[in-house]
Image 1: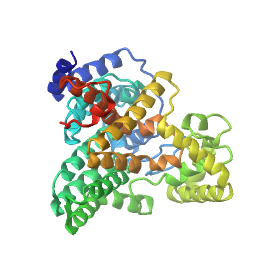
Image 2 (image 1 turned 60 degrees about the horizontal axis):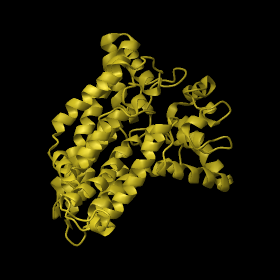
Image 3 (image 1 turned 90 degrees about the vertical axis):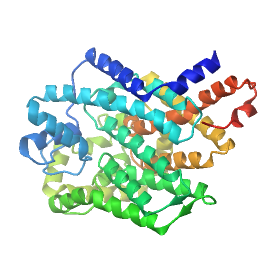
Image 4 (image 1 turned 180 degrees about the horizontal axis):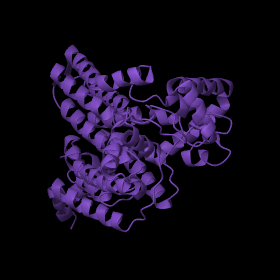
Length: 427
């Protein structure tokens, strides 16, 4: 039976995954309650449609913004400009989210092959995500997370393709830099993710990989060209030059304070630090409008750094708690906590087995990607939505464990012998 399943998984077509996933997501959407919250992304998109500028994501109008990544509010604004009805807009956004999630599920199959994971790993991971396990993210239409997930997976697909060669030249760096710049417009964390993954991947292959100086030059040049238009917009509209978003100081301030909590949900309770966030408190929004968004965020960053310097024990306690949530992500829904924990544990086992099987570069790239994307969440409040894109990456490595078991069963190896799991040649 196991060999038969392994063969079926190996033959699973990404197009079938897309169709089935889309059908299941749309089916779930049809029976889902249609209410929504005017999140920062929605508010910025509605403002774009109604007033012609990207801004006002908070409890009161504050003017132009770079608080959110630009792609999703632009999508929101485009839909809202057609429907002129917020509920219909969110419904259409939910359908778009279902389509994007189905694309992400289908993408896992070619990505697993590029990662040289055991046969069937991508199919197993895809079978997990064809169902909307985190429906409030995948079908809500309120957040950009499904777009970010697709951008992360597409970027990693290109990254593994680029690093799967014996020499890296300028054209390879240019391709990777352009894709990274595009992904950064969904989430600026795409940049540290790619830098971390590429650096560790190159180090893992340093004996068999030649990196020409042009690779770095090409990467930087292409990245700068792609992000230049929005950077110029920020300089002209926001009055400052920064990389995509300007919200880091504010997030540090609400995450590191006397009344700060490690999770976003706890931090949003009355009396916690989010009470001073302009999304919740009109007085904070009025102060931001008076100072300007960039100046306000810089003042909040100074506030955060002052607190960290004067409360090292409190900062270390919050950091340790947030580190724990990176390993075991928190959700108010118990089954989602179980899924996230299982993926993390499965990934750790999978990384060990891949390393012992000699796939050092794959392990290095995955570890670099995870570290580059998630390191910021040691310092700002945790939410499962923030780390959701990395759960998809973790699912691929976790799926390699049962896929390897099925492979050894097919080859008639003793499945009970753990050592036999690591000496097979991955597909």
